[in-house]
Image (cartoon, rainbow, N blue to C red):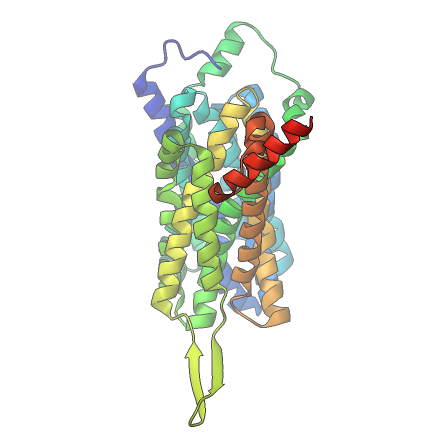
Length: 445
């Protein structure tokens, strides 16, 4: 555990507040293609698969960059790395506005994706300002920067309609650059980095930073985050297109309803951090996966016409999820995803206090790859299957796998660490039978 001697609450609050604002700006930039991509799709006549690739490309860079950005943060400090990431991304976003072809848009989108890598930087930077009893809450508040997706879904459509998508990208670039300058001027180097520099200690080598990645537990956490974060990003990118295609809404209305999903999926992350501190991250993950599974199952049911042979003749009826129920279900899904995102990252500083950047970077990378893979999968499934709700079918399978793996792993851990549990009956009413069995074996011995 790092030394927090001399760290004041004001310094903690300043570091957390500045980091959260910076991450919000980065996340807004990272998801910009959810809105400008719809206009680009119309201008270039792209298929759903091509659209999925376009909106997912920044997510690829943002995901892959998290692993080495997390390592660099452990080595050189989050304040420096965070500032440089924002400046580099702002340049890429400005260059985005100057290209016209689909191929060059994909290249520019790779640079825009650096904004997503800021998460691994911020997680490591913020965690070093707090002890274990408060890290869950602090990281939950920082994670509220996911609200940047809602900011983009709500505000970007008005910029695109009023000024065009190129000007919207330039406005985003300027805002992100100014945010980088303000962040650099208002924050300080984290206590762990200051201590290391005071002692003239050299940063740990990259390979030693990556040692925890050999543990299967880290990859299990990554699968959890693949759903709670990757699917969150994927839906934040996909829902504007979904609303336009399924319900025939205009871009501004679709963006506002998509923001209604992204907003609770962001702001309640702080609540998820507090609940993880209060009840344990494991319990919060159970709540998240069970509730999300139920929501995805309902959302995956396609509009269906039924004909039943009744007593007096055929009876026809229709099962369709209307706009209002759909919005309510997506908001609930976003809410529970926000709890799960905080719960996953509550684990990391506890299990790997000296490798928060590296482990957090890997988990964030795998989770972010969900935001890259899933939109493309949504588009491919639309083109091949032709069912709009196929995206939620895929998410239902994903959350089911995560829940099953988590549950059986926990049961195995409990029985390994507490051997007495293996002698307990599965059901209370079987106790007498188990007792007779054990008594008979004892007499035979």
